[in-house]
Length: 227
Image 1 (cartoon, rainbow, N blue to C red):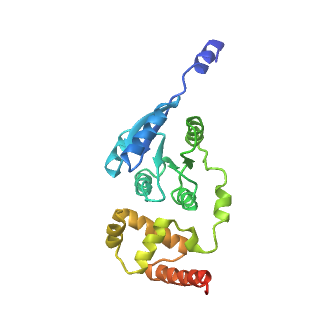
Image 2 (cartoon, helix red, strand yellow):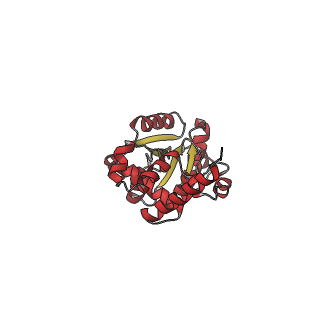
Image 3 (cartoon, one colour):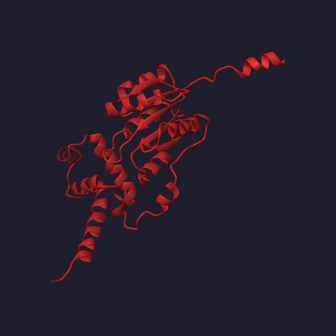
């Protein structure tokens, strides 16, 4: 290759990294898309706010997907699973408000490209997405210590919402009744139950109810004071 040809190759612009942005919450999906649009070297190919919009990924495959998730409500997890089922090899990065053990587990369970936190600045987000686009996974500092430092009591690792679901489950409520009582969707209830079973190391509601009853009794004994 002569010097002129080499110079032409070196000055060719690098193709923008194509990103599809998703979140079951429309406002969050649009906010993430607006953020990506501000980052040089990236272009938004689609905004996904539900399973009905996944066809756009097949029509115009992106280089990666940036998806918002919320551990408290379960929002986003079903969408990520649907994307993974539709495109098993597509790189997916999730965005969350806080680093939690279940988020890290979800990354490994779904073979995701990484986890970003909403506290990151746009420049760091761009750097992380570039890493993922080039085949390198990204996780926040401290994720290994977080998994290692989980409490021995499995109930203490559950979120407040998961404890609410577990109590209703132990009371014999159906998934539909739990959803109606907590004003959450059936899919969200199923997500919480699946996470609860994983945390408690059980496979059915009877076993989960037994763990809840045993630990609740232990808590009551431990916190009881005689006047």
